[in-house]
Structures are given as structure tokens and as C-alpha cells.
Length: 155
Image 1 (cartoon, helix red, strand yellow):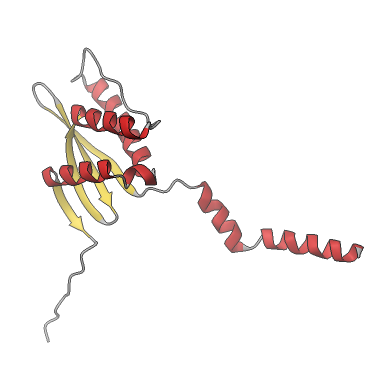
Image 2 (cartoon, helix red, strand yellow):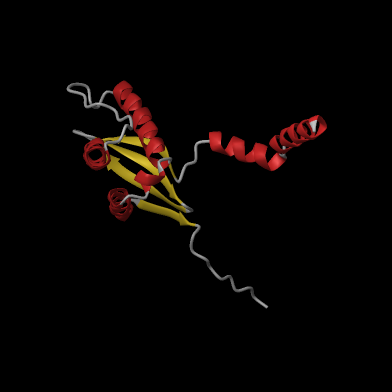
């Protein structure tokens, strides 16, 4: 009887060290990005700045050209409907176009978008899908890896 208990404990320990279980355990710790965002540039105009963000939606890559005020409205909408706890850069009363402030804001916008892209519920919400579709319409398409193209080779 005692040897059966030891055999069971040894078997349980061996199962815990199986490569697939270790892999799955490590995957649980990783942050999954459903949609990836990457800040590219900040373009400064006379009275506002426009952020150029590369968006990768499951293989469809495009550049979102967006102002802070548009992102702020989108953030407020998400906050209202989902009571989210995402970080978003605060509004500035002075120095909106100061290069140091723009750099800090771009970093915080990047963080906000990364948090959004890793939140399955939010990124797949109607509000987010509508927002991204609208921004994609105004943005610049780069590549669509989701469409299959048939190549015809010359004989």
C-alpha cells in the first residue's frame, strides 16, 4: 500500500514535468497580442499632432493616422461601456506640441494600444471593431497577408 502511494506521487511529479505541460504553463504567463500596434512617427502641424501607428490585424497591416483627440474620444467610449482600467495619457493644458511632451505622449499611446490589443474582450467589441474599421478607411494600407493570391508561372 505504501509503495502504491509513492508510485502515484512519483507518477504525478513526472506528469508535471512533461514538455507539453511546461510549454502550456509558460504560454499562460505570456501576454498575447490579438492586434498589434506599433508607433511609427509623430507628424506635427501648426495646431495639432498626428500619430502614425502601424496596425497588424491578424495579418492585415496598415498605418493608422490619428490625432490624440480622436483616441481620447475612443478611450472615453470604452471607459463608459466597459469600465476599463487601461492607462491613457492625460490631456495637457500647455505645451501640446513640445517635442518632449509629444514623445512622452507617443510612448503612453503605444502602451494604451498594446493593452487594448492584448484584451480579447475589448479588441473584439463592436466599438473597437467599428473604430478600427473607420480608422483603416482613413489610413494607409500596407499589406494584406490574409488574402490568397494565385500565382501563375510562365511555362
